[in-house]
Length: 415
Image (cartoon, rainbow, N blue to C red; front, top):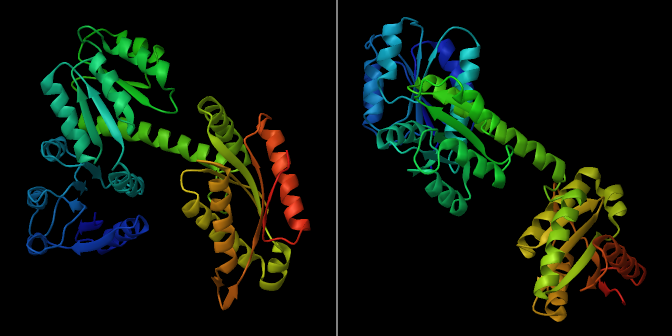
């Protein structure tokens, strides 16, 4: 999908700020300084992903450009210096993404958040649960403006079934008063399966019961919104909770990912490998655990520099992902890597490892003006009843033997 951003603004200073924001987020920015220019651009074949729209233009002082842009199906964020309630209501009566008063620099920080999530929300699923079709459709429309993938359910039981089959759902917005299974019961069931780091739950209600907000939050929800709600508040709450989930995911990834190669690190590998080995044992699957090391890596760093060494590590990780797609991989530190792979038999696994070793040995890695050749040594152990830690030690012994016996080869641990 193209990421063309239409900026409708007659102030050069503001255009400059929005353009920098858009380009920093990967948007291709097109500027229009008048309603006439907007009309001309809308007649072109350019498809705009989103637009920022100044409410008052020299030839359209009362928001006429907003309707022009929205009528072409372009999601729009309105920016205005007018703070009166009449203008606000007029803007919010239209299907805009949001509106932002031009009060101070925070307005542009908020715009950046909107433009970022307008793109990032694609692929994020939100489930709306409400026995009222009108309420479901209203929330569905609001979420679609922000590019979420929206699912709907009439009640709690149907919601749980949808969650079971749709892995992209990160948020559930549920009404509290529903027959059979109400929102509080649904929230309890969700929390049995997903914690707050995995899925956000927001309760909504039009009832006058002042205890509802505290009750649903105490039962596992992250927030509560009273109906009828203002779209501005709705979007602020939704964005805040999606950001929280995103930040938690970033922290989790940083804690489990090697910073240089983007492969899982030692910590992540142990967790994944233990689970995989249990599955292999139950299903009597043939597997191999391999330790891999780049030969003479210190010499590479000394000859070409540490930047070249880092480049080789990244390229090796890239080739590992391609060659061992679906296997458990990790960088253990330095130039040492680990691979856990399954196969039909030991011969197939050995051949897959050897094909990778040979491919690395015959490839040239380009870095700046140099063509660098490297080889790898591999130690492998096949199906073992020992712990993952002990198996790794044995694979490491086999790797040491491969190094001692001349490098660029695979050695199987003699059990």
